[in-house]
Length: 141
Image (cartoon, rainbow, N blue to C red):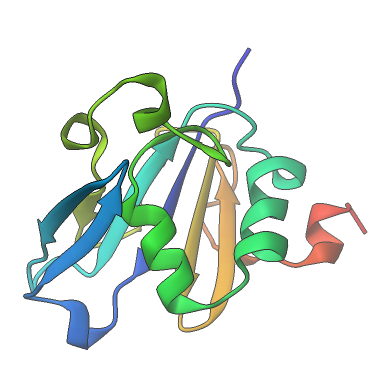
């Protein structure tokens, strides 16, 4: 069984209305942003729980905006470390998506978002409020 999640970033104003660039598997890709869509996100199929993807986001990527943005620009993933492009799928079929808001129900088990230098998360069955992602939350303390 898979624990699925979405990982998002709130884009900085200077990234809105521009083309973001990423090189994946030797190919350069451009992704145009829209000033009305502040969040960019991807889907991850496996290990979306706190000790899986949550820990990787916080402890491996950290809160560096550019590092997280580049991680998301590589597109949807099978797991934290494996983009679908490594499974012979195209970047175009797995490129990040954009949304205006992160309010409302989430379709996956977990949702993570980097906002202004802090990671937040929520579970599908939570009350909808974002909780700050910390090592204490990950370790259940």
